[in-house]
Length: 323
Image (cartoon, rainbow, N blue to C red):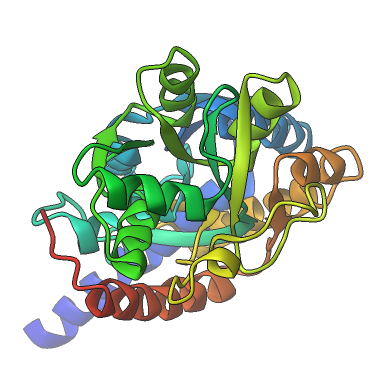
């Protein structure tokens, strides 16, 4: 009799929980949504455009909260610890969600277990940029400078453990040279330091470096992507100039904390996919060097697992050890 009673009690608790989740999903959202983002600079501008379109579809404000510190891992920690109710989501990239666990000895979150995939956003076109006054005109020039002055060439990135940090390490590995990494809060800060003459080269992204290059403040010497970017067709990829260099995966995506109810995941997914493919948004993504990949949560989970394996192989082959 006790066993039957216990079963009935647990069934009642389970049903109550399911009813609560269902009711929450039906009324979701009922208040503003916090979008924690793992980056600043030009990528933040993209986030704000998406947030605006998502707000229109959801009927509640989506408030952007930039947390670029420590390659976005601070923001990742905030979201991982938040309640799985759909009111805190994470707009991040491989910079915080993939590479820190490969390039750092300790990271206070698990990119798979501590998050719920919602949707991919875009593949990211990376770049290598120098001040316009620099004598470095190509990746070959950069390699020659590093070879001529070992340990004297410094390069900036958006943070230790970021994909941009890794790109510089992979250039060193493929060329057999040594450069010194300098970590900044985000790509915008790193580029401003280059413009001020305090660092000779920056591994950045098109979203941030592109406008500065158009304004004549920096010069893009290479594209860090699998192929040339159609907006700068005359600029070669790193791998074109440096045999043995393999472009690491780099994309942005949306995640929620672990345990996010599927009805809420689907609701957010639908609005994100709609926002990314909106006719007002697509041209802005193109200018920013963002190649849309919005899709299902399952597609994002598969991409994360696939690229985790690929990035692990790239880092291992380059002989790069976590710091």
